[in-house]
Length: 426
Image (cartoon, rainbow, N blue to C red; front, top):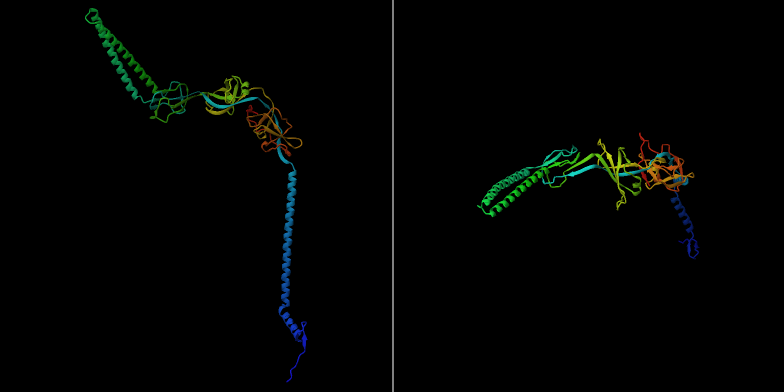
């Protein structure tokens, strides 16, 4: 049996390979292609999914781009608005000063003390046996306020009376002896020295009588010291807690004040002192009670450089409260024209702000006097045409503003009765 030889093909390297190798490779490639390629329906589904994903992603990107554009537009609009607000003038409330009258004043501040007041206590120690007054009671001069226990005083009085009796009996006996000895000596029946000795004993006995009588007066005085009396007409403003309290000599247990007349005791500067005179009328703020300057001392205190002043204020009906902190106004000149501005239009340091015709805030340092309604009265430095900033606390000099005129009056509602201003301030 003969072998069949197939033709051999030479490879590029010179090796011989079977001639049917390309056929086998092509067959295998076609077979692999048939395995990897999906069916036509699956292709379409995959393409559709991919297309949907691309469309969705594009939509999301478009939405995001739209939101970003809107946000950028909003921010740009806010920047434009802020720039416009920064360049625009701020709104500022102003008021025109109102014409008024101002009376130059000196304001006195101090305590309205009773003209008469006394802290009272017993001169001897003891236990309070009786209280004769109550807190707030009106008393007259000489009225008994309280009494100490007098049991020891009674014993002392009895002892002093007994000592006086013994001394007086001794004096009587010695008087008889002296008379007898004087007779005997004159007749020569007794020596002179006996009469001299008896006379000396009589003198000692007489001194003992006077000593005993002085003791009785001391006991009487002590008994009087056991009763405490009011030194003047007034009101009891302090009393002990009750009977049985033990008190020492000089300890304050009562206070009596005369509230029918009160005194404002204060001090003033040297400039104010020059404007005040004794007899000037001072009006208390709030009550409008009149008083009169009763004393001015033309001598400055070393530390404060101020001079004492007293104002006497009658209080017959008792409506004024003693020991209260009060202010009194003393008119020291005639009324002069002034301008009135609201309380908030002036700072505590005296600065007032005015808006100029060009809309610029301008600062002015002005002397002012407070009125009873809280507004300020300014004699020099303002005119009715000025635009005064209502809220001085928030104003800044040099700021450009848009003034807005306040409709209501510069001052609060006027009181029922006209009153004078309150206080001049620098």
